[in-house]
Length: 191
Image (tube, rainbow, N blue to C red; front, side, top):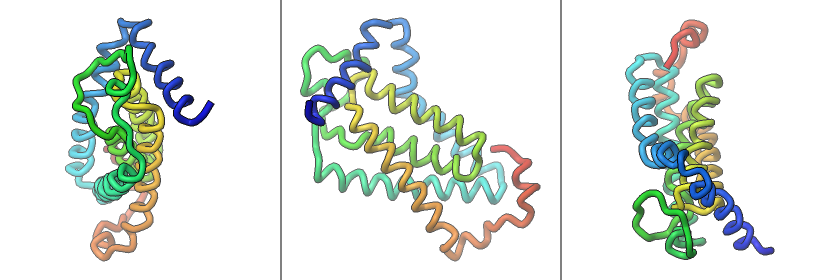
């Protein structure tokens, strides 16, 4: 079996769950389509909580997302495939999606760059958000719009971009104005 065969087999395994467990489909569709709004609200709440640590976390997340999206667009120039529903027969397509390059998954890039950034600053809350990112990535395969390799590449780009942003941010001059004066006081506030 080559890489493409494994990718398609894994896709079929996950996507066929929607045929076997139709009662889960509304929940999975909600994860795949609408959790992006939850992530936006989490970013806004974190920013407006007015703690420097949370603002740095949001800045890190936004920078990570920008880096990851640029890297994703470049990666998409070197490797390209259409969505599974456009290439395969009998795909359980649960959401509408236009046909285009599905590599890497933009949803995986978004969720992993933001959620891993949150994890870098707030481990407990970040773990919950990383679980959400995993569920969203899984849901994109389940609903038939991405192969496992698409979401794995998006997740990897998101995580690496969050780490790069975490390394860059302290070196920027504006970030010194966000320096945490009393780390214990900042830790006690939640996002």
